[in-house]
Image 1 (cartoon, rainbow, N blue to C red):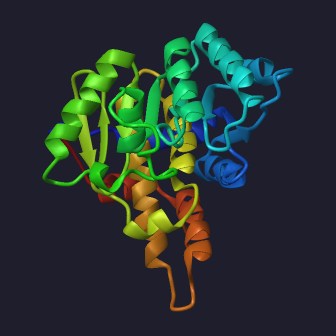
Image 2: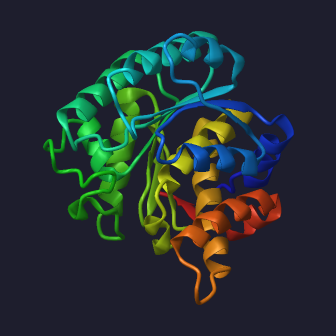
Length: 279
């Protein structure tokens, strides 16, 4: 298996410090901003239609996150996405809750149709909804349906699905869960970093989407590898953060420890602790 240049990719994020525009949700906006700062990037968040495209022009990457979706955000997301496409900037899409409601599903499909995404980062249920394979209401809020968990038994099927998604959309597919799958039209990586307790912290997926935008903005010629590096880095920090927990610590402490771990993550740590393989 070809070893990915994970060290260089993290070094590039910290050396270039890309400015990332995040149109995200108010539940996780602060944590996403802190995760970007921790990895060495810089955050900016502007969602009013009067400035969304203009702010995007100043940045090196864009994240569109459907988390707390409302009708006012949709024109801003489209305007920012189109501006980023015009400028050739990477765009990461996080279709939070796609499949949970008609509004979310229809909006997600509109985004996929009208914006050229570099990466779509979602759970398996959300990704299936984008491909028309999930019934409305099946997605369990922002979590994957129990039947859509990626396991060793269905990993090959999930990898094939991710490649099909990438071929259809032109975006790198990053399907995250207990086992993560990152794929373009031809290549697939599976990642086995992270810890189950990460599911108890609201917004780890949103943070990963922001982190992915930073890695791709800093490594624009290697979107598949950069997305894989970001997924590995988030999982490694989940492991390091869990290792710091003490008897009276809970999910709030864990959230902070994950961000702290990203702040202190060294390129060598990332290389040594990342557990990925080409499928």
